[in-house]
Amino acid sequence: MSTVLVDQRPSGVEPAAAPVLESAGIPTTPARIQPGGCVRLVSLLSAIALIPMIIAHVIGASVVNPFTDPISWYAFVPGGAALIMIGGSILALLGALITIRMYQGGLAAGPLPAIMMAIFCAAMIMVGVVHTVPDAALQHVRAVTETHGAMIGATIHRISAGAAFAVLPVVGLLITRSISRPRTGLPRLLRRAAYLLAVLVGVFLSIHLPLAFAGSGIAAFGFLERAGFVVMIGYLFLLARVIDCESPGPPAIRR
Image 1 (cartoon, rainbow, N blue to C red):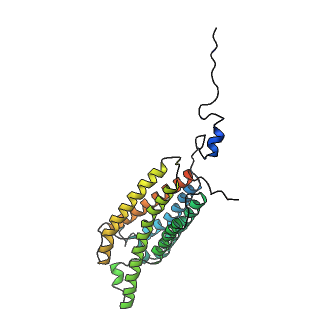
Image 2: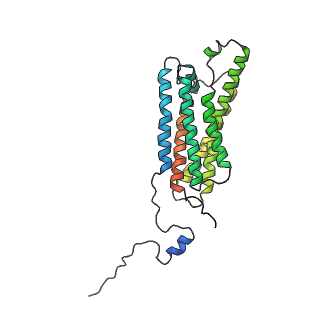
């Protein structure tokens, strides 16, 4: 009777080769990818930021058309300015915390990612501080200097909103460049999303800003603006997912 010998060792890397591969930084066991703190952070703060926006939409439902009017017009309904400021400040805080996680996870180095995210955070605060002015409100402005001030504020608001969207693709590409051995397909997805977002932002701003400065605008601007913020939150979720799944950890301290 012949005896069949079966190797009971698990398939994969030979035990003798494991230390060599691990010393070279090559994992010998499949990585267990689970949603981490950054995804939970985006989920929590984006949900909190949504609450004042919903309240503003309810309060201003009778005077602001969400399909044609920008979100900043809610600043001219009772309590609307404070609600917009709260929402923008929460998104600014979210941007700052994502920046910290990027550096802690070893996916960001040098000042450029921090500068880009600082622009995003400052822009989120500015869109809550200054607003575009409805035509009806401009008719009640008495002094010419106040009218000019209102128009300057509207310009700052538009530039800030555009800057917030424009820097996000740069941050995504900087993160993907820092990942030399991706564990998942998320870096590739983030790279594609960054290029797509850059194209969409470029096309939108090239159409909207000239019309806005000329005193006109896109007919469905309100809808596009709200859809844009949904895209922004989705992009932040993707950033957070990449940070959670691809972070090798903080750089080792040289002794």
